[in-house]
Length: 277
Image 1 (cartoon, rainbow, N blue to C red):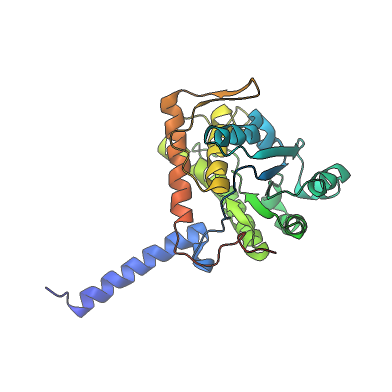
Image 2 (image 1 turned 30 degrees about the vertical axis):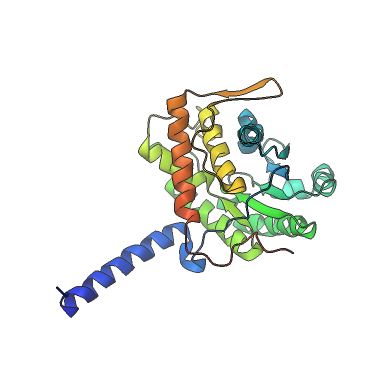
């Protein structure tokens, strides 16, 4: 039985309105696809450039350990310092030499946590410089969208998270960079499982579980694979990285998978980060 035309138009309008709201929240209204990268290949060279949000709990090493269990064995390195920003890294000869010294396939860029919120123009300027530098050596820039400080309700502060999302997506669209939706996964996790402690007592830095969730999102983003089934106990070269119970690890893996699946499953189109320079 066919719907009356007025009913059909009302349903169509309601669907379009709710769809556009979802798109507005994630930034999908501009490009119809979340900025992502072609999956890394076994043995690829990956550099993490950031600060304590990156180096706490040896998060890049977690990503490598995860990938190693699947036989991918990437060459992962990190250049990070407390409170470092993309601007301070740009003005640091050691950071510049680190980038120039290896043919990096992917470079993960993480700005100082507050800069995209209070001074987005600096994130845009120096993030743009780093993206151009990475592409000049035929690498792919990947922006690590971080989390806001812990809000009153226990999730990332909504205004901070909104500003982070806006700045990182603006940079990604302008520079054709990929985005790792870490902050969105944190928000999704804390809304679904408020009992999981992702924040340390300072309400900013990640606990071991926070870094593990971050690593799961990075694994999804960089390798295009689901983290389901990865071990919760990770070590690298005999050094313990984390020891998360299987059930809890599965919950974090599922959040990472669902977040990435939702954002990366948009209709196919131009995929930032996949075009060769």
